[in-house]
Image (tube, rainbow, N blue to C red):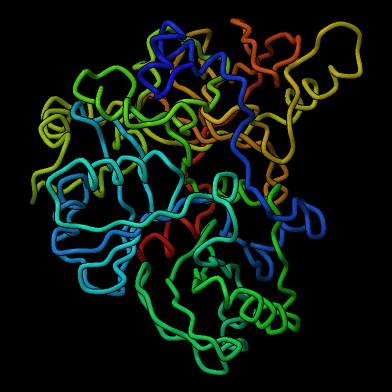
Length: 458
């Protein structure tokens, strides 16, 4: 039995084979009720009234404290940390030596020399490894998600979002919410408990992310629900939760670019046989035996606005070269709005004889953790479609895609290939046929508010 990622790759024959044939289920939101009402109404509520997301269980927390905490972060982040005061947060993004994305998380500056990274494992693992393997004077504690931890989380984490979010916060705190800039932090009293709060938003709507010690969880949760009664506050379950990224334009799960570089061999040996990067399934209609063909750059994900060359960090020279030679402008992140007739025909195939289209889970259609579908124009591949699901707000199947910049004009018609023609042994892949579904390129984020006033506020 392999004892780490490096040994697992060797046993499978390649990183691509390891992930393509993974028998693990796709990542989900654990310990959160799948639906409090129904996922359609829960989606509608984040645009119409206000919603409460429970983020306490599906992310990992890494707390970094000590004199070298900021140096560690600076050595890994494409972001500048020159202006990073206490009570501010940043979207931390890390790349490998060749400039390809490892992952991102939200990084909170809690106290002097104390930071907390919150997100899915790839970037958390990368920071954790360097904290313990590098020459840094830091102390770390880590709280993994509820699929891995024993017992309760260290902290609860909620988000109140939507057009009525500020009214809910006003009712819950008994005072006017402070006028904070995006990603700045404050403290509230809710239910007699001190709550830390980040000015945040999802799908372009205003709101706050709230957290505190787990022992305060029930009191704070009950107080938020009570405050939200007059504002039609809706709790969002695990099924609808992930679909908000379809509307906000954030691509949650790029494949971490860690699998073949010899400089990262020690890191792969540090990652266990049960690590997220070892077990997560890879799938979709795009197939390549080269795992590097699945990697993306920060420019592909529109993180170019975060890149700062005011400090040295892993991957800096590679990113500078991408900008110099123009490859930083080769691709663009977009939203694909799938054609309703073609999507409906694919759904209908399950009621006809013979193998039909690959089954669509709803509202998130993905059957894997890392998903890549071919995007074509006249049979030629022009990009990959990733995060895929149904939006009740748009009455359409949507996906987030990275396409060639010269076809990224809104309104351009493309074709998404759905289903695998190189069938895998993944348990969640049934006998099926590939189908082609027309789609229209639109901006990411899809909603104008998220692209304009919301993003400007950031």
